[in-house]
Amino acid sequence: MKVRAIRGATQLSGDYSDEMAEAVTELLSELFEKNGLTKDDLISIFFTSTEDLRCDFPAAAARKLDLGDIPLMCAREIPVVGSLPHVVRVMIHAYSDLSHAQIRHIYKRGAEVLRRDIAQ
Image (tube, rainbow, N blue to C red; front, side, top):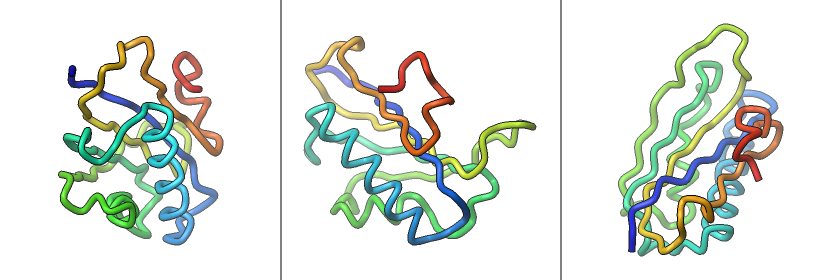
């Protein structure tokens, strides 16, 4: 098996902890499903959020998926002028037999505009 990085992002309507939990859980679940990942495949998950999201840590939602023993890290996204607001990005590091071309990167809830070249 090879180590792969799998990207995704989701946009929230505002700075709401319930929506953060729902959107991040939805995103991670789809990333796992579309890429055939199980918890045992995971190495780590890195989250960023735009500076307008202060309601909660995206990793808190991941823990609700029983990922508390997987290394999770959150950071602040670079505040580029004119960038899309209320966005959580994720990069999953995992073991996978999929080739780079077979990896499914998932962008949801308006975040598709961030990477039209790889968004599913």
